[in-house]
Length: 106
Image (cartoon, rainbow, N blue to C red):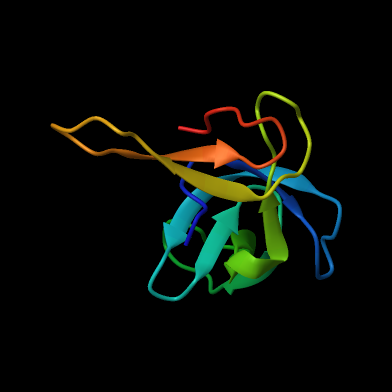
């Protein structure tokens, strides 16, 4: 999965299409992400001693990572992600780059 926690993404499919937000949680094994302000569901609470009236709480639900695209911090456009491997002999490092402006996304 190419998206990481802290990335700004644009939602491209689903009921929240067109919204932007930061990734709060990334689940690479399930290919899911949790984005602030996107896919909010209601969770009903029973009355307890701490909360005697109960209530309804908003809860962030994960969405599939394929429904979001990264927004480049340099060119502020939704872009695809590429990788660039450094040619250093001692330590080869793989960095994420923007396919549009070739800017570093790390």
